[in-house]
Length: 264
Image (cartoon, rainbow, N blue to C red; front, side):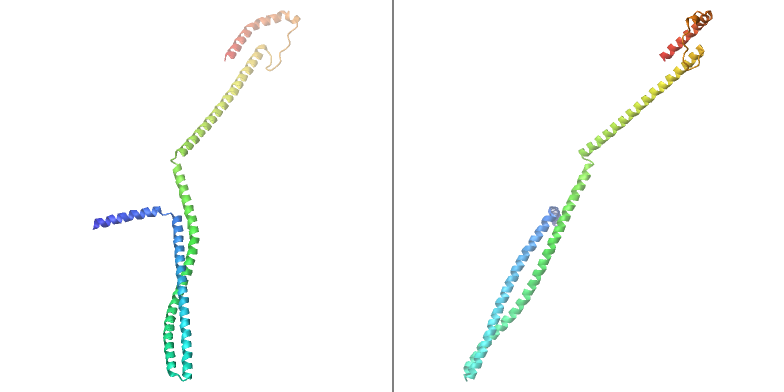
């Protein structure tokens, strides 16, 4: 018995779980409203039938009451005419209709109570259906919002492991690497340009020093313009020729220095 109870419990649990998963709030709400409306139709039919029976009983009661009044008048008329036997028969008929009227009256009172109860139930059911329709719309909206939120969370949660997101991250890293390379190339180009200007400045210093040495050797001040060539009379001066011959070794050394600087 314990084994069968456990099996029954497992089967019931699995069935309940399947039913719970299969339940769609929107569909269940719509079905509930339909069932309530069907109950409302049945209740209206029951109220209509109860009212019809009430009216029929009321008519029967009225007819019986009229007969009671009628046979009461007939008994009085027979007694006035001195026909006591006829008056007695009229009273007997009156008594029969009185019994019927009393029975109809009791039935009518019961029917009145039943009709009033049915009417109250009908009003309550209509109110509940109206309230349920309002709640249904709100619950459907909330259910749709919850489904949308759940789907969004699923999409966001799956983006971390999806191939599309991984590809996006790889491309982002690639762009960042390209930007780093471009920045490094710019820095290298700037460094080369600065080194070129530094070489130019260094070369200018050498040229200035060379000019200063040349000026010292020739006896002229640095950065001074050279004097014009001497006239033919000066060229024939023996002293000038002697000085020129003395400067020849210096010029040779100066030329050698110039070549060394050009090779640097």
